[in-house]
Length: 179
Image 1 (cartoon, rainbow, N blue to C red):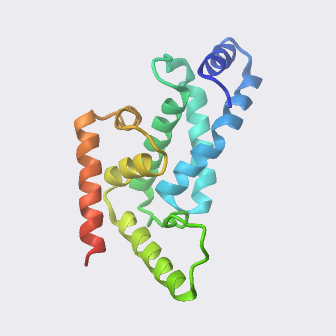
Image 2 (image 1 turned 135 degrees about the horizontal axis):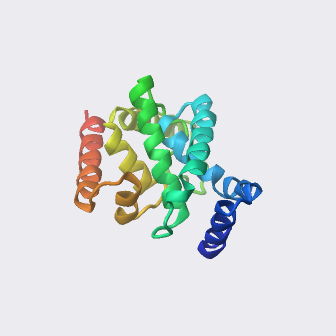
């Protein structure tokens, strides 16, 4: 895992003409970008396309990176923007196959497993029905462990709006799941 200083040095080298160093940035962040894309889009075919678009956009955006935030925050901002554009354009239905209930160490009975699977399917469906901004804020907070400040930075919105989006997302999920 690269430190912030190492990433800053690599970005400076890329901007100075050492284009081969870009592979280090891709290698470092590719899995986390693909994971975020999957949580936001859900379709494996889209993950590859969106991830590729993110790194193409990042390459052209590197001169605008001012090191006022972490490189990962800058990359996630690009990812969220590209996913938003893609969802508006393609109007795809989102599935969340990687969202699973917390697992404990004991082996569940067949009946418990069926109940868990049903709950997971309901949760996936409910998250997929959230408005895009609510879904994005909730996924970043819940599954990527982003702070509200980081979410505000990634989504380029105010901190109160992040708080509101997450609050509304939780309330909407609660309403959908209690039906």
